[in-house]
Image 1: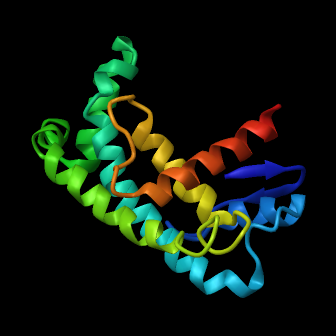
Image 2 (image 1 turned 90 degrees about the vertical axis):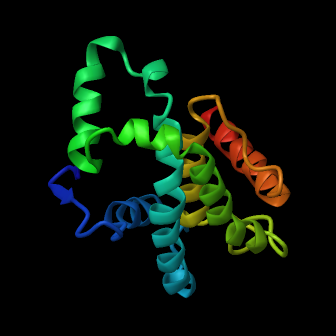
Amino acid sequence: MIKDGKTVVFETDDYSQVIGKYLDDKFQLGLFPREGEGVQSILWRCIESEVEGCGFKLNDIYWQEFVPKSEWWAFVRHKERKFGRHCLEQWQNQQAQLLEGFAQSLLPFDEMLLGHSFLLEERPRFVDFDLYGMLGNFLYSGHYDLPDAHSRLKEWHGRMTRIRSVRSQ
């Protein structure tokens, strides 16, 4: 939820992107062009279920390295309430399968880059930033790299990183 003056904006379901569309409209970012509406909806659902589903579990395997010790109990409690007892240990035991699933979930996005610099065309749209964020979470622990088989996705990630760097200067 965000509050912008007298306007309160919130998501209406797990995949609504109401906040993103509000910010896109307010700042005229061009992330949600009308002609790409249905395609982006399909893609962000895939990104936020399949890609994120494996990626955050792989990152969370190394939770003790980035969660302050004073917050360990709360972190484990939150994860186990949401995903079941011993989920963190299960993910560690399933690491190889999760990495394989993660690589598979990225294949369609790598293929989409055959004819474009970005996922849908020659400029980034919402789904580019959505996928970039999910990959950022996967890479956060420092224990992983993007799969070697996805060379176009690696190049795309570099382009997205440069966009972010230019914006922050």
